[in-house]
Length: 177
Ligand code: C2E
Image 1: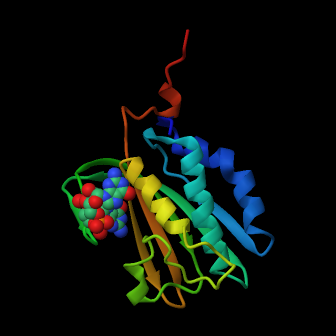
Image 2 (image 1 turned 135 degrees about the horizontal axis):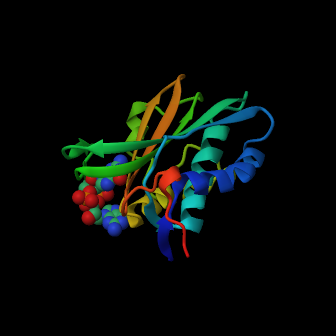
Image 3 (image 1 turned 120 degrees about the vertical axis):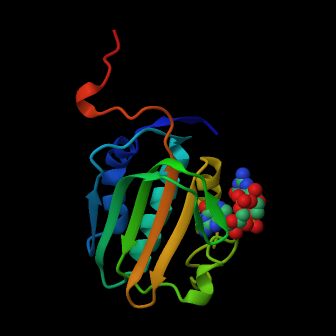
């Protein structure tokens, strides 16, 4: 594990090519970036694994094709956020949302999808380790993950990563001398 300061937008741009290949021809990736996002602290390879996992799941949820949206947002929580059984402390977060218009996840399964070995895929299609791995990596980065889903409408995964250090606006980037 090699946690480092990561610029999420840069990491996502570096990964776009690979993600586009992963989704295939029927699915379109749409990236929407926040104007300014502070650095997070995570292992870059693991972060890539998280995004790849979520994008592959989104693709598989849309066998007929469609659009996967990846959005970033700078979010300040003035007070703690309680969701599921988690308590997200107040502070600044970089949020990534991965959105699909796929089959959706039935409500009775939503609470279980981050558990190891839970899978909706048929034997041979998946190991069931995907989302629990994603969950573990997000936790190791001090982050949080939530899911909204409506059967027949699609799903949105929300990832909250705490900001580490001051944001660096593009026009004010210090230049190393
Ligand atoms: P839980 O999954 O039964 O976890 C109980 C406690 O075990 C957690 O308390 C945390 O201290 C520890 N823990 C569990 N999984 C991990 C992990 O992967 N890494 C690390 N470092 N520690 C882990 P905590 O954080 O107060 O969470 C309480 C409950 O809130 C959790 O119960 C879980 O149901 C929920 N929760 C916590 N974080 C998230 C999240 O990011 N997303 C969602 N959907 N639920 C979360």
